[in-house]
Length: 318
Image (cartoon, rainbow, N blue to C red; front, side):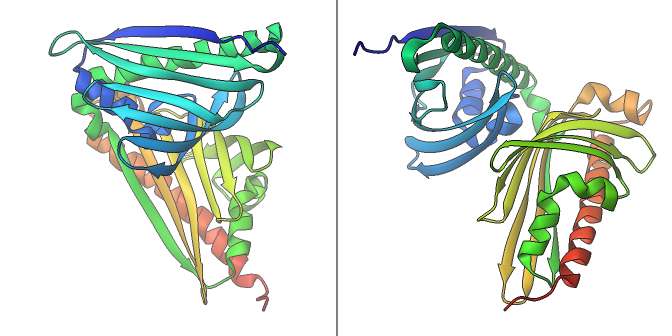
């Protein structure tokens, strides 16, 4: 049988920002869901600082794919090499490199290389992978460039927070409420509409209309990865409302002998240009931080209250 053909791609961009900042964005894969539009979730399976193994979920041509990769990090050379251990069809293998080339104190070139093989080297499958690789690579390079150029204000535009509640009821009942988002419009006053598809077990694509305290309706789209055995759901908004440039989060359940602690975790990057149009003349990023924190906290509290009511009415099974 002839060897599969290796296909190669190259994408690059010039960035008006220090090479060290760009490399930092590339090297920290745990932040990729917040940084890269196609990336949904990253699980770090192992790491010793120089090498790491990851499981990733990302969108490709409108579908959600998952794979395992190993990466080698070279901070001195500002290079990250990667190779997929387990690829998602139609791929049989993919690898490549991120290379940051310094072009002065405040400029660099970011290069992204890919090589890949496809089962049977079918033309339609090769074209599918090339299209996904091109679309995602362009989105990733553009996003890294944008964040690096605006790095001085990024910390002010980023907020991370969590809300927790203690529930005296079975963890399975709480998890069922959080996982069954299709039922939320019947149960939650702030949710007008939810459409959910789950073409792969545990991976949900969700479109939702929610109502703010002021009565404004926001339409968002998200991908959720449900870890049923671990009682955990992670999510990434792929279509965000005004004020929100990127948002990720998680529902985390920790059961014990008498009930369960539920934590809702949120990470958000604000869209600074929306602050005054949404909040009014003179509004600041600090005002936007408070507003988003309050709105997400209100929605989270309503959902956790619903979960508590459901769980505390559920029969105890021994």
